[in-house]
Image 1 (cartoon, one colour):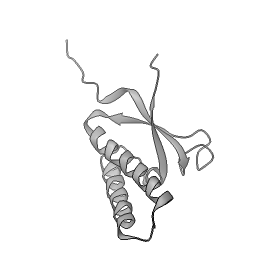
Image 2: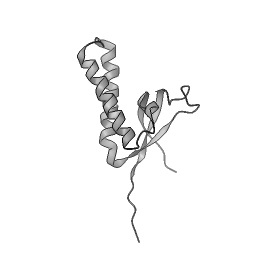
Image 3: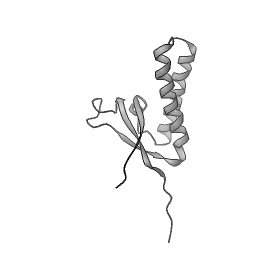
Length: 105
């Protein structure tokens, strides 16, 4: 018997919560993306960057170099996720994501 590797996280997905691919954006229901196990560290980096950019924009001057660095990092990680087929297109980069637990039936 050949064993197949689980290539995606079993109980977690990325859920679009705002932006292009969220409900009310370019989508009527919002996108859910499977997360490849081998790319989960990059997905974590992307989510950390997303949160850091949000927090920075609340209490810091967004015209400073530190914010520009966060934006460049966001773009670079997003492009890698597209290259690795975690994201399907640029609109996924322009979407805010939550990591959500899903029930597998």
